[in-house]
Amino acid sequence: MNKPIIYIDMDGVIADFSKAIKTHPKSNLKPYQEDPDNIPGIFEHLELITGAKGAIHQLHLSNKYDLFILTTAPWDNPSAWMHKRLWIEKHFGDIFYKKVIITHRKDLLIGDYLIDDRTANGAGNFKGTHLHFGWDYINNKDNIYPNWEAILTYFNQH
Image (cartoon, rainbow, N blue to C red):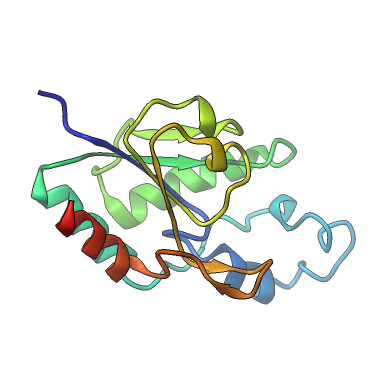
């Protein structure tokens, strides 16, 4: 029997991209003010979101789920693709070996769960269960699952 598939978004879910935007020295320069995804090297040294590493290890060790990283990378910043992959390996070892998917169409993937902080790039139309994670910076409020503790509680109850 196949294990349920969990897709875990990278930026805003396991990696603190918003903090990198605020602290990167080039974030206030043109053209990066409007498009911080294209800052050279911005994805190389992201900090972990609180609780992400422990929660992912717990889900992995439970052996109940098939875990994948699902992320979107800026088209005009190809080094970001490499930096994201290397970042995942640095923080999670071989848990996600050959299990990283870079796409701008998250709605096309087949799986059971998507942990994502946004509804963009097809996340809002994901066919499985979208666990809306973290902080909603547009409406200035927590999403349904504000942190990794809430995510683990969800999976412990299902």
